[in-house]
Amino acid sequence: DQQVKQNSPSLSVQEGRISILNCDYTNSMFDYFLWYKKYPAEGPTFLISISSIKDKNEDGRFTVFLNKSAKHLSLHIVPSQPGDSAVYFCAARSYGQNFVFGPGTRLSVLP
Amino acid sequence: EPEVTQTPSHQVTQMGQEVILRCVPISNHLYFYWYRQILGQKVEFLVSFYNNEISEKSEIFDDQFSVERPDGSNFTLKIRSTKLEDSAMYFCASSRNSGGAANEQFFGPGTRLTVL
Image (cartoon, rainbow over all chains, first blue to last red; front, side, top):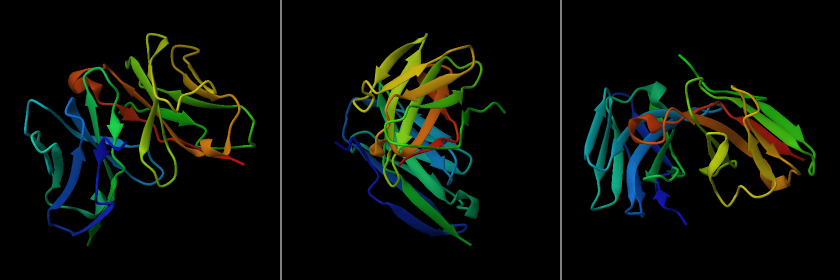
């Protein structure tokens, strides 16, 4: 039962270009979404969040877009840097419940 | 910057043995979590803990698992009789609150458990 899907297991992007990581969910009760970044041998690190009352949230180079009707969110990284190379997890929850994580997308930013 | 710490970083044990994984959450956080990630698979929720009791647990968290906050700083996950399929990376996380922006969970670096 994959409530949160990240259909691209990996993505390669040239340094300086835009990285777009996608996430789809099936549970219409989800109302809060997070993106985490994970380096090898480290725990996930919180990046950015968005609640269902918004359709966009921006923090520096990171922007998350939420399309509730499509049950889709995306993380945009502009410009991409080599240090952004990591696994990115999308996570979602409904009110009072715990987060459900997607399987992750491995981003490689090429110099 | 405060961080969640976990010990040990790597634990090797024989099948059937008990293991205790230790975590020190961020000091002003009230909610604590354990997750696991089997190699090559997604991060899975195990259990959440608040006010000295389990608030939610997943179906993975069966009777072989238990959690405890033995003092004001540590948060432990015990696996009573380990199985081969318990081999995974176990992440501890904590959050200040359970709602809104304060729900952001801060993760520890993880403990890699290898069951032989």
